Image (cartoon, rainbow, N blue to C red):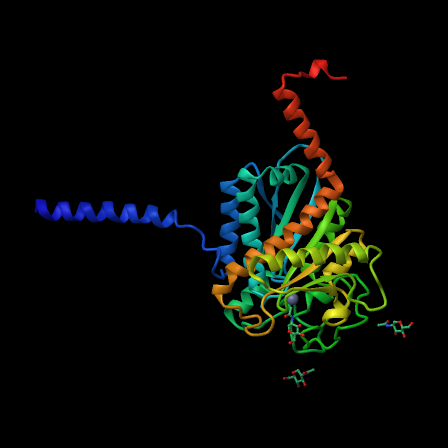
Length: 358
Ligand SMILES: *[C@@H]1O[C@H](CO)[C@@H](O)[C@H](O)[C@H]1NC(C)=O
Ligand SMILES: *[C@@H]1O[C@H](CO)[C@@H](O)[C@H](O)[C@H]1NC(C)=O
Ligand SMILES: *[C@@H]1O[C@H](CO)[C@@H](O)[C@H](O)[C@H]1NC(C)=O
Ligand SMILES: [Zn+2]
């Protein structure tokens, strides 16, 4: 009897210890996660970093799911500049949501020790949407791994569902590289911004577009950094800057694992298109708008194996950080600010106080 009780008690204690251990298990950034796990992860980030991370709901999908982003930065009370990043606008490009999550973890990790990241989070907020096309992403897990579009029904005359959200933005909408057949993977919808997911981004970013220095939209695959515009008859006014910064980002990417990324406007290096969110962002006045097409270059395509998540994220982080740092320093004159900070450190070290300075 006593023995039995002891065994019973030990089992209870053991399972309590196990349960606690399970709860503290680290999130695995090198696996693909279904939507409910990503949503839970978002809440966890807000809980873990209450001073820096806030969930912002900014729209509904066709199936009435709430679209949310993580707003990351110091709460300075001042109006801040901003960086946009969205992932998962195309459902089947699973490496993209994996990258957004990795990106969030890395900037929060860097913030703890890196004065540059602290400076950037003081001056700017990062708005990161891990999965924009939630309905499509869920459908790609449940029903059709290679689903691309959202899940809204086509017009009454058509039996297929789904609009290509990256052809639905108000940027030369419907003119090139699209289809008006609702069964097509590049169906552009019934009109510019007809889709709720495209509306969410358009209204949220559009309402504070002068704050955004940078608009990064993450896709796969092809190993490309695409600059505006998708329409071959238009060239961005800062095309040379976009190319210079993009080429330097590709260099940064290559340094990490040796992978080549091609930089250019979509008609020059991929195919012409219209209605992309990147083009809309640039046309709205956001200077540094890029599409990342992550790994690979066709071997596995959309079904990139999980053992490539880590290297893909590491190199893409380096490229994204290059663009973001450029945007930050151009606006906040980082070099001068650092020099001033250094000068102050020296003056303080030699005992010069504020009262002796003109
Ligand atoms: C839609 O489905 C109906 C019934 O299955 C069929 O008769 C019709 O041809 C289809 N229309 C298109 C555009 O595929
Ligand atoms: C681009 O401009 C050329 C020359 O004006 C014109 O023929 C062509 O239709 C335009 N392309 C598109 C996609 O509008
Ligand atoms: C990717 O593959 C295409 C087609 O084979 C090729 O043209 C392109 O140069 C490759 N890109 C890179 C970065 O290796
Ligand atoms: Zn895509």
